[in-house]
Length: 258
Image (cartoon, rainbow, N blue to C red; front, side, top):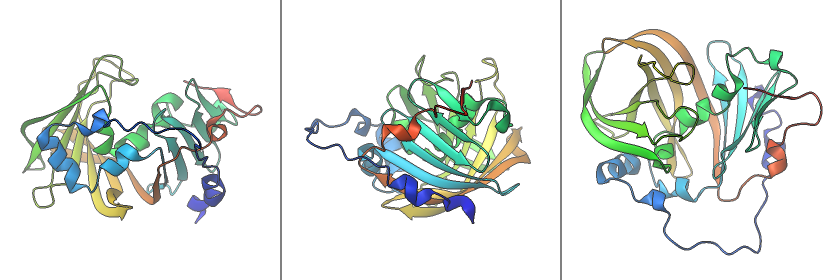
């Protein structure tokens, strides 16, 4: 399977920061509401996410078997995605695509470049500064009631600070079962909810991540047509960042993209 093509070569690009003193002050991201900490604890030793500096995983779109390898420097949220016919990157200043914009059939490269990273990294990513997580009333999905957390964002956090998320919790495991979410990237007034199901958790160095995520259209507390399904493998968290060159826009056959 081609999901691992070039994977080992990319992992060799990790750079170790030498000769720098580490900040020993407690990371403010560790200070989370008690109820949210309980959810995080159900997903493993989440301090490993706080300590990590880089993250990578392989992903397959189950509808057409297209594959992607994702690489992220977590502090700066620099991103690179390698697919069969294109590469997408965020060098910290701009989002780019190679070899050209026509190679990617999606509506927005910028919207896509961190989409699956963000979904896949929930609940850990909601420890970010500027994110507010609070317990809310139970939510229904297909007739079943779930304990829920509402997630909102301070102004100017990310590209879509108007998005709303609800994390729905599996009563038996205490882990994330569903995410209900809005998308305001294209329409700031949009309030339509979508549903994303998290399944088949696998351990990755002390944290658990879903092997499968399935997106659904969502209406009147019920799932409708499947929008997409993706599966994941080769999940890796490391405590040193990847080399910045990995995220740099190629000098040839690449364009800045929105």
